[in-house]
Length: 256
Image (cartoon, rainbow, N blue to C red; front, side, top):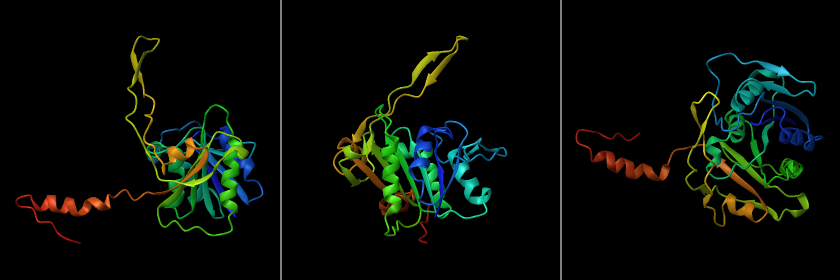
């Protein structure tokens, strides 16, 4: 098995190193990650310039681009042999609920899936103890499952792991994405030259965080495993949208 590892925290991230070390022996591991922190990059691709790839003494390769760039390059040209799957992480912080819209960690996994590979995004719900080895062991458990998992097209697993030792985990939970409350306001600051600047405010707390959600699983010290489908069409709204359009004068709604 050939596994591509990537992330959004950068090639020197301790979470990426822990993932690489924790998956030793499962197959051939290759690491292609951003050369710096690209948290919040989402699914952006760099199309305005060529990308530079650098190989490091430990064998990891870095790209001066986004997480999506890294997976795209790795799968589509950097290696002669194909990969069997993509694992993105271990992210230093949670990717729960609405976080996945912005997450470069999840984006690296979805790019792998768009290119035809099963993919997992894994994040540590960091509380300052940095139990990356627990998250790495969770991923190893999933990859060692002898039974094949078919999620369907454009689907990945989004995994969040409590920041506790392995023996303190309460179990694995299959979850849905919760939702956060509105984010906190921007934080104005003044730079040394006297100009006003703004920090993006902290993410909101879990607004939809009850039983069944990824937020709730983490609060119970369970690993949260959510199947994520990147088809963003709101299928349930199609009939109502059709009726609404049919109410417009001079407009013909054509069924396909």
